[in-house]
Image (cartoon, rainbow, N blue to C red; front, side):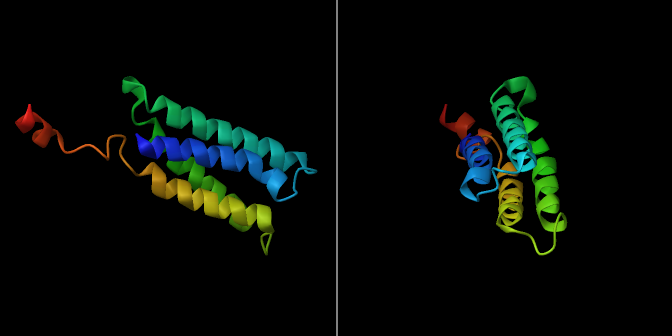
Length: 113
């Protein structure tokens, strides 16, 4: 489940980024980044629960939207939007990692037991 931990850490970065990139005077960035970060945390957290173990795949939608917002909001994108692009693409990569990627395949586990 290390992929979900990375998603939560990325969400913390996203929530802090308006203050790091000095965009905190614009409440749109603060609220949008905070809500998107909360959504990523909720989806990553839901992946720990067996009935919603595939909730992290919805982060693909969030990452796509974040990257598109960063790219097409203003041209050329300011640093805060460049951060949105990078975070969105990073979330797209991490969200594809299965929950139990660090465990051996189930057939190998069955053979050992």
